[in-house]
Length: 465
Image (cartoon, rainbow, N blue to C red; front, side, top):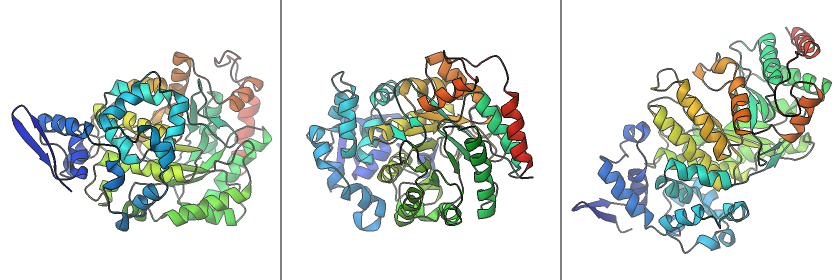
């Protein structure tokens, strides 16, 4: 492989291979600096971006960043690549591809047809030469719709996950958080609990709590327990009411092995969930979370920059036709995304790459308490995500996850995005909210409380104490 070169300001910059070029072209972030992959100066970054813009898209099929024989994610990407879908852009360079994506003539229909032909490396490459504005504009044009009991990703809709975590899995505390979310009109993406313990017994008890409430009030929503996938398979074998099977995933085989998974295990889990037949309007039964820096933190990045590794995780997700995928963008910490500026940029990159590849992307707009970020940064990101067509965000009581100990977004934040941007929940869930008197037909929260629902949730929780 010949080196890539670019002369800028009288100096010639050389990049030994495509992997190096991609890393040097990446907007500044602490994770790539930690890994020793980042550009050494702004000038070198610009030179790399200019050079990357001239690379033909077909190069990413000919020059894998991680060797085919070394990595099952690379094999998945190349073996499932749809050359017919890729054909409309196959003659383009990365820079020309950016112009094609931004063209008014490139609409949601064209982007949906293209998605199976886009590899994560192509998506990552073109994102590296884009402004935030470009990422928002193109993400907004992408349409990715999935279904289980609610329809996620329709135009004009913005969904939310109720995240009712509790440090001891206390059913009363979890039930109170679920109630709080429902009364704010949240939960149409999923009621998803990160259990404090990974035992099948604890997982099954919480699944039954949610399912009892769902059935009693005919709530069109799905649930998920964010335990390890093997624990969820055990729960299915014990006839637990499993809706969505969850797993954190990454963009390399070695990083996934650090999570205790591989593609074969995910196939087994999906088959088990499909066999239950619990979806009412669709069979998208998987839920995945990702995050920039996961491969680096596992020392499993193969010298590939963290954003490209993240995009490769979306190829894993896409293969399993999930209902939901979200980047937990600032969760790993400032070692990987240092401040609010880097977190916001990463979130927009992740949303863009996922949606361009046909993945139903949401975002956990979040940060850790030792990052140089605050809730104002998340407010800015929330507006950008809403405008960009993000499928859903998290609803955490008070935006403070007391079990995982990080800062996210609240039920009030969900309402803020919906009311400010004129967006609505999923149609099936919205109809239920109106029927229950929780929201008005115009989408505003109803002024009256729901004591009957409050008493019922309290009863269900007390029965499991």
